[in-house]
Image (tube, rainbow, N blue to C red; front, side, top):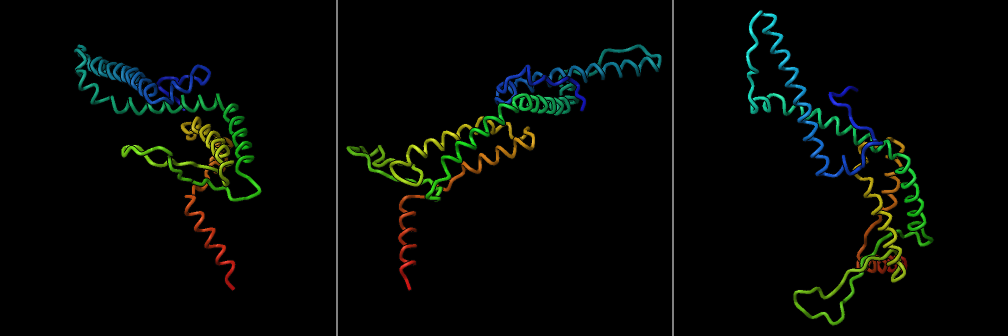
Length: 216
């Protein structure tokens, strides 16, 4: 794969330089300007060659700035996006071992957290009144999330969410990952995606199940 401008290598780039929104846009603008200069230079050479072959004097380049943008900008922007995409791929490739190690750690941690003897694997929502809260503009209750059992499961829920949050670091990398990294990322994501259930709904469901069991 050839490029008009050689993409930077992963060793010379930080993830922020190519994945952060503002930094990526600045890089695209920089590349687009450089590529447009290449296109204009080539067009100018062709323009001059046509006149030389016709044994005519070479006049001034006929396109003004607005005409140059209209003729070359879209094409230059697409090439800039292609270069940026390769630079992102280079960054992910450079960090592949770190990504792999981190995802394996997250998977191990999540397995320990979500595979329990109860086997429910659910996040429950408990609503609790706030004592002494009477102002009309303030909520009268707070939401508490826990894993399987309350109150012990509050800390377990927080630990699961912490591991799930670590996956966010690699969300932008997904499109540039190799297949083995994609599989690890999907495995970790699947472990972190637990069912959320309202405590009231869960109690009603359990009661209904018990009643059904008692029926002859």
